[in-house]
Image (tube, rainbow, N blue to C red; front, side, top):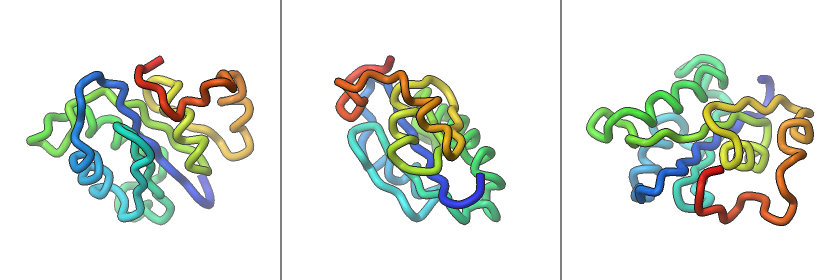
Length: 128
């Protein structure tokens, strides 16, 4: 992925994860993060290639590390991770699609176009 890259981590776990744990976890991958709502954080990963490899490798690493125990630097949760060229696409993909999702630039409509317009996923309380 060339240009801007954003990774969103969304945990649909019913277990509450303190915001500071999400924040600290996200900061271990990027200095530029945004907590968009409970259990959701977006990372700007442009320029992180020297530390983690490609954005694709980084998204997979975030998914794998989030499963680890808290003492090992993880979140002890199976989170959905999405990589996209813009943060909104990453948020929606991580909210609605399980596992690790890659949304190619220009393919947002193909990937996200079938999501219901009445509930775009901004305030979902459960994992779909």
